[in-house]
Length: 51
Image (tube, rainbow, N blue to C red; front, side, top):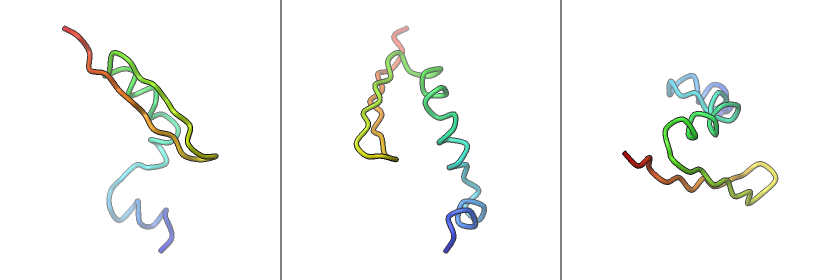
């Protein structure tokens, strides 16, 4: 099944996340470390905000 159709069927926003996900995470977490593990793959290690 085509990824676009799958995302539409699930109501997900994968492609929006790819474009804006790191910025959104930085708005909600104190510290965000991106670790590139492949040409199109990354891991994000996030620390919660201290209140």
